[in-house]
Length: 279
Image 1 (cartoon, rainbow, N blue to C red):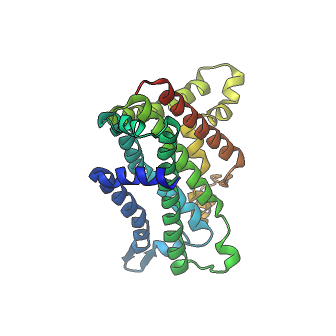
Image 2: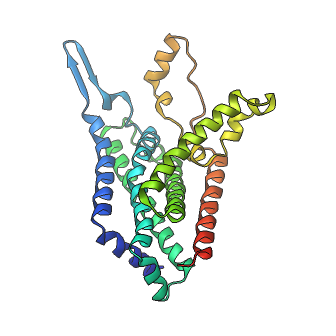
Image 3: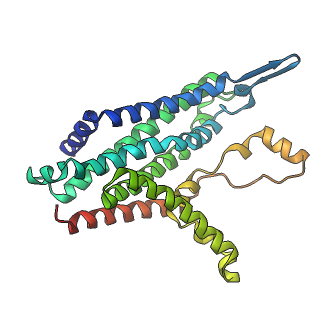
């Protein structure tokens, strides 16, 4: 495993674009901390966002996992590029000549996928912990360790998304086209949901949300529901205008199972592609 990791790490380190994208990604994750600096001081009106409870434990785990997931596209570009470059630079053929099997080649990619997802999750944990210790009104250990399942969901979400990108990079072999297809697939899922909801039989229409829950990108999105309706300020405002915003924002075990299954499907499809090709 160490040998496979070092093979991929050397390729990643030698690629200047990948290094830049990874750096930008972690800089953007760090920028979440800048939210704490948002202040409004207009006469008697004083507003400090950090004092609104967004950095309170355990809420901060949910918020930062949700916000951090928006930046995963930067690492997705790295995954797609490092896969497509294997074909354009003929390094995949050289690796096989040097004795690497196709399964080992795929495992080297997956080790890097898991490594990037793990480092990103650890970074979110550290940023959240520091911000929470600085601004949270609740610093008891029993409260701090609550809701850490959002970080697990974040890790699984990244692994699945990168596995999808790895499959696309292997199938299409061109970075731009693979990323373009990713965007097209996102629109395809949205169109499918619309058709299920409005242009189908009554049974399908009633169960559209359940069916749509099984779609890969939507399943990944469902892992970490939006956190904003958990804020007391949002709920108080909703109560004033008589709008019900209460909903289940916890991590659902079924969504984890669905995403893990999709990850395995992407792994299997990628391996079948590699196995069937004459490289």
